[in-house]
Amino acid sequence: MEWESWSAFWAMGGYGGYVWGSFGITALVMIGELMLVHRRHRAAREAVKHIHRA
Amino acid sequence: MNLYKYAAPSTFYPLAGRLAPWFYGAAAIFTVIGLYIGFFVAPTDFQQGEAYRIIFIHVPAAWMSMIVYLAMAFWAAIGLAFNTRLSSMMALALAPTGAWMTFIALWTGALWGKPMWGTWWVWDARLTSELILLFLYVGFMALHASIDDPRRADRAAAVLAIVGAINVPIIYFSVQWWNTLHQGASVSLTKSPSMATTMLWGMLVMAIAFWMYCIGAVLSRCRAIILERERSADWVKEIA
Amino acid sequence: MNRAGIESTVPPSTAAQEASLAAAFVAVVRRDLLLAMRRRADVLTTLVFFVIVVSLFPLGIGPELNTLRTIGPGVLWVAALLAAMLALNRLFAADYADGTLEQMVLTPQPLSVLVLGKVAALWLTTGLPLVVMAPLLGLQYALPAEALYTLVIALALGTPALGLIGAVGAALTLGARGPGVLVSLLVLPLYVPVLIFGAGAVDAVMSGLDAGGHLSLLGALLLVSLVVAPLASAAALRIALD
Image 1: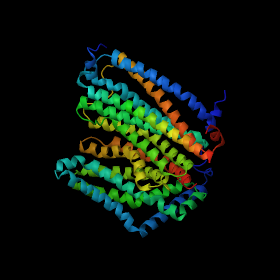
Image 2: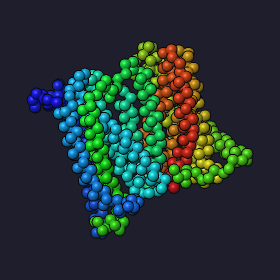
Image 3: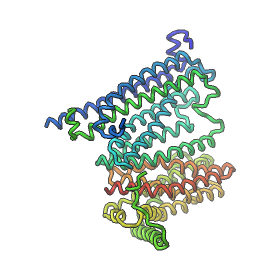
Image 4: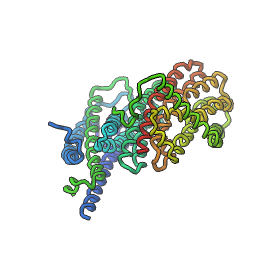
């Protein structure tokens, strides 16, 4: 697949908003989910430390 | 090798911790390959132009939403039948990831439908079934959250997951029936007259990437849930 | 799947055992009907809700008869779904609150038979009136006679299925926080196939096609729920009463 130029790549034949909107939301959701899970795990570890220190 | 020793939260916790990074790594690699195929190998579609490239997200997300639901129902059933805590925790860990996959499938479906058919929502069989699947996921999580005793919550949610799993094929079939009756021309977001081999490959590679990602995310979430539930156990004290 | 937690071993089938199963079923139905008759207002509110919802749609959409004729089957079915769902909190809640449900779980009779009895009684008091009322309301939507006839049959097949499926949701949310809204969230997605085939049957007749396929599928859904729902509800009740 040959793209004429970078701007053609980003424009996606006029459908840029839809295509990048899709990929963007997916990236956002995945990064967000991982961050949420990380935060949940960290909170659990904190709670455990708290319990076993007391 | 005795795999059953990993049925205990105390042994599964470190195992999941060691495995998760590998799945994230695999997900990253497959994503790079898949995106390369999707954007630099697969040609422009004759009918849909560049917009079709959304399938490289939409279809894998939809597949994962269904696979994760089956996995969730499976582990919930195991937990209900054998009274194993870890199985129920795994089911609970699977639910949010499945719901996110369903959300992505719906969102990308809408973004694909708008340029193709002019409306943000298309009542085709797949999208409508995905919507109902999202409700089933949310119902599972809501039911679990609304019962205070965690083991009781596990069991009630398991019954719901199993009933839902029986229903999903019934719902899908009935929605397909409904769809073909109400639309003269069969409008399907995934039916393309011919899919170039490269497009198919891109889709498959992205599907594997999504799968690896889901497993990684679920393993991590399961670790968090284990710590939350087993917080007073001795082995947790060692880790603290 | 491990049946412990669903029901204890069912005694071998003898005439006496079958009679006692039937007797248990009838006893539960009679009791629930008696209780419902004492609180007649409860029963009527479901029916009134149905009537009001059906009457609201034209007010929101406009009186144009052709439009109403098109949406009629769907509206009537959705209203029936919502009414059936509202009636669910009458199924187990009262018995759960006063301890009768615990007694039911402890009896030697299979819990699924008792659940079936309760669902049957609920249908008689809330589902059957919907079936009877629907053709009258169908006239508000200018539905033709064959459509009304099909509507009655479809609802007669569908409302028991709705009651059975709903029983599972009602059992699952016993003792949960915020049970009312939660039940709707759980149960409405499961109602979708009944809705699709039920409304589809009436639509088919109105388009001049045969509704046989739809009605058979509705019947199939009813049969499947007759088998699965009491078992699932019994399991859920045991979980709730643990």
